[in-house]
Length: 455
Image (cartoon, rainbow, N blue to C red; front, side, top):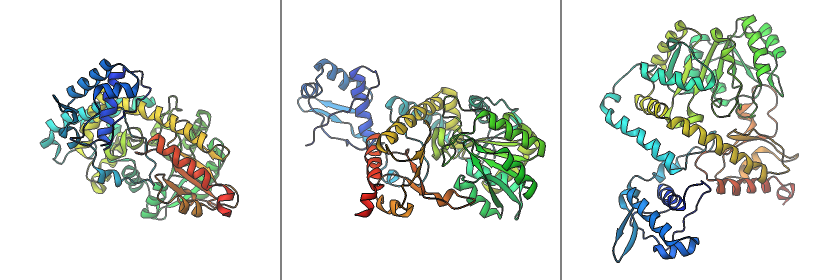
């Protein structure tokens, strides 16, 4: 029989609560199974170097949460019902490491609050299985407005829609503003999703030159004159994959060009909710020209498949309703109800704050593990943008890292104009723990050593 020893985090909580939290976490992650015997209280107290009464309080707390069963003369065991709802290993294995995912909440208190939101969904389950509005009820759109206010946005409610994820929303917007053969501008290095959608709709993408602040106003103005584009697509905060954030002064310059040329902007604000002080959305400077898409995949969770979209006008919002109905029918009422509940009770903001703190911690791990290797990064980015040492190819590195729990994507997927260059997006989020991430990044650092390739 293996002996369970809890890993106590530096949470500032009393030890008895930290032990109960660690027990809940290990059950959720499948490290403990229903019926498994826990170590006797005195033995665990000696192992941890703490008071017997502290462990006794911890076991009592775990019992009150339904995590354990105690039997006089036999000991304390993990409750069968505690593991019946533990994470499904098959779903965990289905994780797509190639996606730029947020780190997943591990704090038992936060996860508990997230689960409480399902109570509202369960109470309204039959109603939520019906066809509903393609862009959300008034309550859902009000919750969206509350969430968008975190980015300084206070649009009229008739311009706000709840849509089925940022990707589906971009597809709907492209179907409204462009036709096959039309041109859309974007960053030279850009989000692969817009490349895939442009190809699907027969739209030509033109990549614009960038400097340390992002797309330059000169490049934008010149491209408008040469290509007569239908729109500009930007991912301006913690851009995927470069991690670059367009500063406020450059945003104002770009907005001035958009207003002068009357060019539509698709602003993909997927990561804008994460940093403590992200620059204001460009939509605030050009509201009548901007489709602002506040996706929830990065700041709450990709499985929700929701975005909060602000159209340039009420008329444009109506056109979006029609496009969503044609392409996706509607966003999931189950997801909308859960997310609205989380926003109203503060759980969504708790998830956002967790992601903010955890991304910063993971970026610190990357700096430590890849010291001496060149890469672009930002404090709250979900990835790093790695420049490979001379003589080392991206395909070779990806082959060497096969089987490791680390998401790598080559620069080819992101490059619109020019040669891709020997770069990789290295993802730091998902279900991977800090310890596993550190191990895999050290392995990557070793794989990038010229001596390794020479061998």
